[in-house]
Amino acid sequence: MAQQAQVTPTEAAKKAGKALTEMVVYIVAYVIVAAAIQFLITEISPPLMAYFKYINAILVLAFGWYIVSSFAEFVYWSVRARYDHPTAVAFRNIMRIIGIVAIIAAVVGAAVGGIGGLTIGGFLGIVVGFAVQQVTGQAVAGIFLMASRPFKVGDHVNILGEDGIVEDIGALFTRVRKQDGTIVLIPSSSIIGNKIYLMLQKLTGQS
Image (cartoon, rainbow, N blue to C red; front, side, top):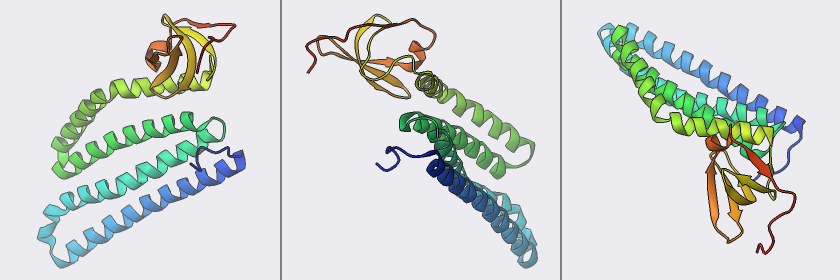
């Protein structure tokens, strides 16, 4: 893929700027569309204003996704200027998860309205937050792991008692091939905070 190829800081900065511009355009578009619809309803049929909160919820859902996606892409290219593709993707995915949680809470709050909307939206945000807590924690640990680079692909390591060659370092798992050919997927959150042994010699007999 094009994103996985090596990029220069200048190229990454241009793409980050483009993503940031798109995000601003979507925000402005949402404000204009919401204001226009509200004005039309007020002028044509004021009683329909009671349903504007539902219309606004749909607008938040539609424009929110594009805004979140643009912001996540901005974060991706900002990180990509210094780190590799997997690290940047991990950051982008975390931003998307946080953004989706915020959109869901905003949509529920806009649809219900008032104190009830704030309460339900906040509660829903907490529920969804707990639901993705483990995955998000894994991803954050993976980001720190890839950023600090205590080991790299091809290194012979012993992590949590698993001895083998590192084949891949992802946001959620590190893939290690043991001497007997067994593949071990070690959670990133388990690696952070534990001892990592780097062996001087690689395992022999690997295919």
